[in-house]
Image 1 (cartoon, rainbow, N blue to C red):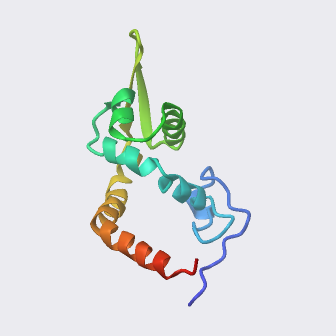
Image 2 (tube, rainbow, N blue to C red):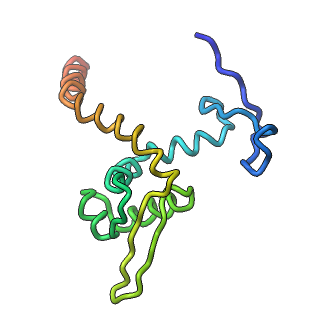
Image 3 (cartoon, one colour):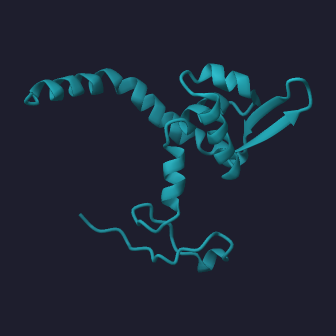
Length: 142
């Protein structure tokens, strides 16, 4: 198997002109693209993207009720991280209680298609994966 080109540990933020930036290589332990990939594939980000995929603003309470099993604290942390990365915007409307809406940015919208492909694959192959797990576990010595 051919090895991927190595990226120096001296990978710099995107403040450098494009011509001076090193190519991204997610297989390199020093490449910041690993952080991006890890964030996009964490437990909750793909589910948040799925809810926001149509590009319309969604209230915090609606995100919470649609994504079953996520705590308010974890939802808040994940949304803040996504906002920090420029994947979504947060809009607060002064009311009692305050209304908070989230919407994918143009950058965030570029994640919809690849994450939807992964989601579709998971939903399509869940029965096969579960059967394989059961078969594997049954073959293991006690």
